[in-house]
Image (cartoon, rainbow, N blue to C red):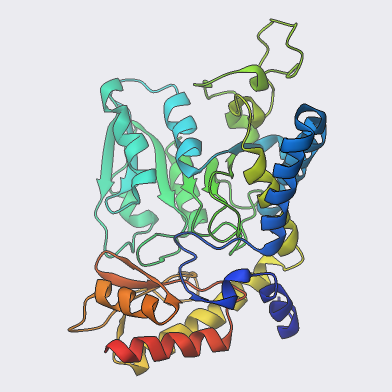
Length: 381
């Protein structure tokens, strides 16, 4: 679905980072838009002048976030928990599942630690973490199929891999998992907000993501999707006043968990962070996800062209079903760390992962930004 070029330009006007930097590091920490900055300031002013008096209004804003996140995934609001980050979301799944000694979970060997350590931490409970050999993150359901068995309870996979940006076939992984009675658990942080995912058509069981990358939110405000029929199968590992149906009624001691994924939220939320995330989600919502994906395809294609013209080697899979907002590249004879530092000196922000340059634009990135990237790279090569 196409979006008029002027609409991307209008979105760019909301990004103060553009006043100084050509920013290509959204796969790490994205800059927040001005509307999100103002939301934090407004919350801080209310916290200083109203405090508890503003709390009911703050709470309603959280429900706006839940609704918008549900729309992103074509999920039900009751399937969304508001969590601090991807680690918290995946840990809720890992620690809440009724494991038995001898069970196993299958993950790729080069996963980001967030989608590896929560599973390795289950070793003391007799759970085995099986690591699937990877080819620069290019793994598919067929690779995982060689590592599963009747004791596999979960397959955990990143929707988009963090180092090279390889986007995985979640439908194929879901079919594999369900064929053996296992869950498919997704680390969605490198794709949520950049690519469409219809959880009514692709039956993943759970997904966790923070908002500080492709959703242009601040750190510490994210989401956990748990399919409705799976919610009751997880034991909440941290519960508090906000976990129960009568949350806010502190004179009622009965322990009756919410029927929804909100039972996993426990206590007081990161109000400032979620208010900022709400503003960012509202800013992005008019742009269809298909349009965002197409825009990222265009921009990353331009980055690829730039890298190759300068003699670099693109390490990312650029096929239609595997590309993402991440381009990983190598420049023979020059270290990625040196390239990162030189670009920073010239006002271009990119990153280095696994010894490669990692370049990650966003939909508001302009041709001028890409020209600055080209000039900065050229200066160090």
